[in-house]
Length: 397
Ligand code: FEO
Image (cartoon, rainbow, N blue to C red; front, side, top):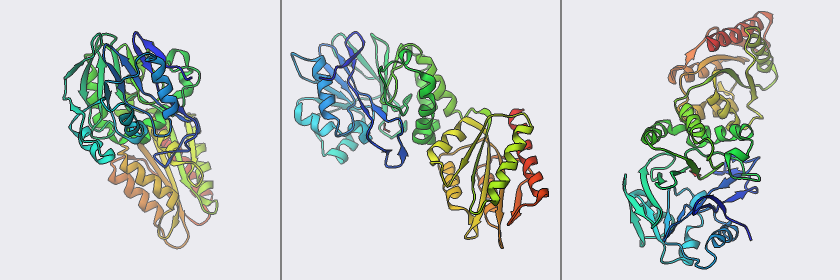
């Protein structure tokens, strides 16, 4: 039997680790897996906080039964978020516990109907409403668009536990413990940022609003739907999400480039040398024909500098570079110090396309913009070095 893990008096983790899914949402690699965190709050009435992805029911039910060995009954299912990684088990639970009342907001009710055909047994809550479980009391906060319109949070008043949905979550299975003080958080931080930047990053405004709502609340434990349970340093994960959702950056530079025959790659090497000549050692180079975009997005979220390089393909930006630029635009990356270089054979297109990205998204474009016809000569490589140097100086100001 898989045991539930006690978090505090009568609050338990009953989630699962997923080490088998290769791609989250069908596109984001999971080399370190992911956890789907569900929690059980056992007052006189029992509330389950979210569920797990479909297919993990046996372990999930084992853990629930472990908490409730004599009375396997769930009174409420509180839904903070309905993306299927958390809601996939709802139809199975509803069959097992037909009397269970679903707690959500107006959007939740709309979505459970369209996702699962459930129209009855849904109780709607609004901002500030409370649900008394007898010995435990939940207060609800509406936090739409962190990450879907129906997302909300709940706060257990006695234990000061926040159930935050996707907010404050991250990729990575919980290896050996669920708690921040027992895990190597420095190992997890990259995957938390990759999760934030790729999944939630587009919704920085709603994340800021949610953090604002929480500002006056004494939070002892943060229980997100993914990643560690923050019982020793809850302010740390809230602080990281606050910083990332304000797009606050560190003084480093991402060089993201695509090269067909090696000319743009040679320019990249000169750019990188210019960066270290200026005294900046925080460089992350991504060959976009090979790096998965989720890692590039993560690094661009961390660092102030972004230098884009591209060959010309079909009179425009090389497609792997174009894919990055489009995604950055969709995610509303802003306030970066940007450099541009590229190459062409008989007609340009890549460099002008990248310039248009920088201008449209109102980035701080640094000169020189360097463009080579076929093979770059020494003079152009020197310009590339100068570009790297100038971007680094601007980033370190
Ligand atoms: Fe973990 Fe937006 O679902």
